[in-house]
Length: 66
Image (cartoon, rainbow, N blue to C red; front, side, top):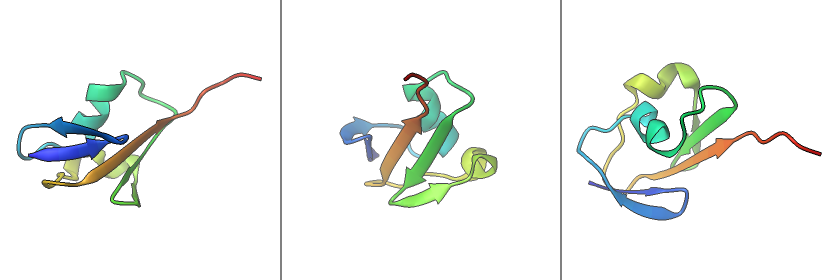
């Protein structure tokens, strides 16, 4: 299936979860937020939220600095 992740098109296996999509982009386990089709997905739902063809996924990571 085809997903748009952070504005880039990716071909991925059917049934990919939010957690799997996040893992493809970042090894970070904290400071990460995800939205699918403009809806925030809580961290507790990442493992059970399956993505569908043509979903738009935004993965945001917190950055420290000043």
